[in-house]
Image (cartoon, rainbow, N blue to C red):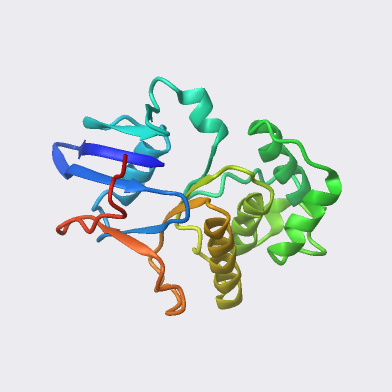
Length: 215
């Protein structure tokens, strides 16, 4: 379980959010909403342990992520708003690099299969710099098909993705949640009506809790 306790975030002397508390439990899919500048990306970076809150703390499995950072990051997959793709490398090389960086091991056949899942067959060995923004985004998202991490934190994963790709990702999120995984994401896109199971945290308004905290 991921717990946020009384989080506050201040940027350029402006309070983005304060007193923010919620829990995300196995099986949850949670969308963070809010106007531009409400602090969605800042919140995700705090929850991923990439930035410190101005107040409050984040806990994973009842342990502060500050004290158990290595354990937490082994069980977390974070994909930021920027794809982080190296244009000089091919999609295969980028994906292999991501896997090695995260300490994951997989066969080359798994890399090919993951790229096929995101609609990149035929592009695996081309320089990524020659691909579109959407295709580069798909390289980063291919990590989802390889990751055993129970917690996925995703900043705008649907950006530059077509309707078919969005439906495929939502099905993957549902399957991950059904296997007791957790998905936390931001998106400016309206999610398909069929995914009513998605809970929401709305920044800038009265907080709708993602889930009650349980002992």
